[in-house]
Image (cartoon, rainbow, N blue to C red; front, side, top):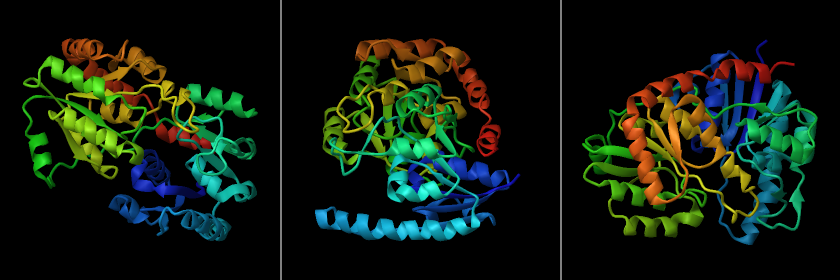
Length: 378
């Protein structure tokens, strides 16, 4: 039975490929979809022109001063709650996509049939800013949600245990619903250089944050020889990492940073990639995300690489190790050292054809239509 679903995403929707995938999935299966989000007008035309899609673009203009933040919490959040309350008169299901989206709406989500989707693994969320003294009751909203959705099986059981949930959360992998590879519009000299590259492209496609260890991967590429291999990076750099990333690039002048591209246009770079890297490491410094978040990572990158038949090299975390070993699509470096990573890249090189063909098998193993249909069933 077709449903009317209102998605509330308190962030830029174009920065979250899994949310775009969800919208495409729902529309393809003839559901009516409303979206309240930042940057909703920047979505692909195939979504915006769908007669069953009803976006509401939200904007908040203000500084990061204490007064501006307080004003946002008091007035802007209140305005968003009114919008959601009004829109839910014609929708069957309220689907929040992140922990922060739930925090913005608060008790309002308790009024509706609520699907609570989580992008990250966390036990507690600060009530105010990044303070660890008081926690926001995410567990209460999860316990009262119609469905809780996470992207990876281990996360499902961990969240169930942490939050004392009666049911195990549903698992919706971060697989793109469709693959986009338009390379016709080459806008910069850097892009032209990339697509004309003669060397084997080692590509990192994704968010650059504190739990990404790019330094050892850069050293590994240098060890293998920059006449044969090259390292390119595409993605958004975390605000707290900008200075550190700038220093990383200055110390590794053979590494090319192509910049940030809104989803799904970032996928075009995969048509040229030889190996995709997933440089996760456990981060103990994050103010509230669990260190297990990286250990049980659930990156959309693994599906993006696989969708374009790009074998992978990752660090030794279970979220990568399990699919790599089961499907033969990549290999984890047992140590986060440049020597070990270089040997791992060589291994992929020597087994390239089989890993490349295995990627399609892995990508096709996930049926997003049936998963979302099950989530929305009674």
